[in-house]
Image 1 (cartoon, rainbow, N blue to C red):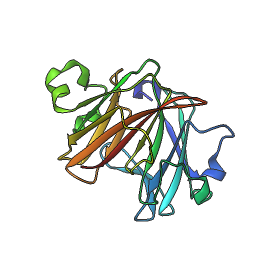
Image 2 (image 1 turned 90 degrees about the vertical axis):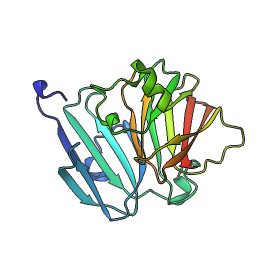
Image 3 (image 1 turned 45 degrees about the vertical axis):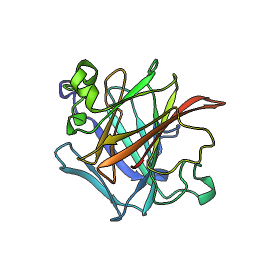
Image 4 (image 1 turned 90 degrees about the horizontal axis):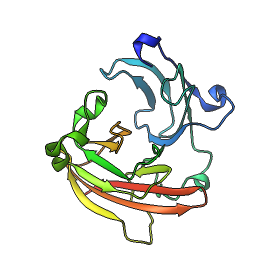
Length: 212
């Protein structure tokens, strides 16, 4: 929340204890190799921390979609292996599901720390910046799935290219310019593939970020 409107309260705890009683706004699987989840500022100051299993289910609830006064973060182990989505074939893979802004039909992927400052960084206004990243066309979809695993897809991707990632960081920008996600990558060259899958709940855009 902007400082002018007051602070934002952040709550971190076991999902069963902090669940406000409605579906989470964000659900993801997170690798926790050191056994601790930390909530930090952009400057890496630790605000909250708690023990967590090596593979944790993360659920996040916001009191408002843009200017939340309260953000609740719940941590739990996945209920069972059979409950894990097909986009997560191994426990070493991370999968994230995000809501896509309405009308978004393309994504921009860029290797830069400026992805941390969407308030001052608009990649769509710079031809030079666009040329240094990847513009990924996607059909209008309601959600975006991002994984660092090899997805079990039977059809060919609608996009397949290699992104230089010397900083081992990918900022994912929808066409409304706000950064949606900052993803860490394992190598300095990252293969980017995209699919669009029709599901009963609507079209889902899927993005796989794997070593090139």
